[in-house]
Image: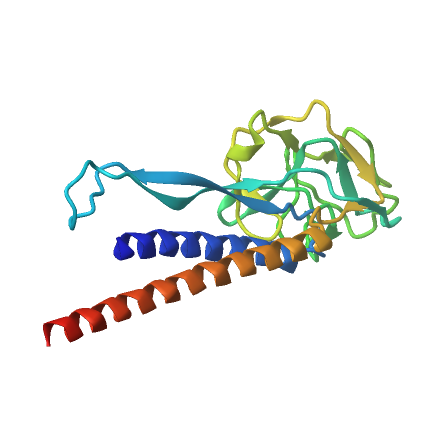
Length: 246
């Protein structure tokens, strides 16, 4: 019985530790442009054949805690006007497409810049993809404009159109840390518009995350205290049995 209770408590502590990792990661990215918060989903895991071997009786199902999945909070962060011609925010559910060593990735972080080779890149140095590939600028070009549909032009004329994608099931994409996502089934955006001169801030609420962190910490301490009391009960029981047999 005590062993079962300790295992159940341990499963709760493991789940809480995982939840604390998620909350801490959210808080660490509170100032990361385009970052999307995450949250944990838990489920009850029932052991249908568990039995207390010390007493005769029917099977006793035991319920454990299992961290089932991590969900993305894809709600929009605040759009802040910067006036920078290479800053772009998205109004809608779409994502920019960037090219990485691991393949195409999706992001809401629109703080772009032009590297030494004249390629439009994100802050991580990943080329920002247009519908025809990376977007290039010449050394003398200026007056860059980005329209609502993602079309880019400069003093040299049209430069291409940002590849903005949407997902029928956004929860299918995988967070790769920071503000990049992979996977899913991207489709050309139909309802998302680009906003030049703006960036989207993280959607993490500092107050809510701090409150969640305190709640998780207290729950973990409570589970740890219960485990300690169960250890004390076992030691007391062994001591009394030893005294009785003496």
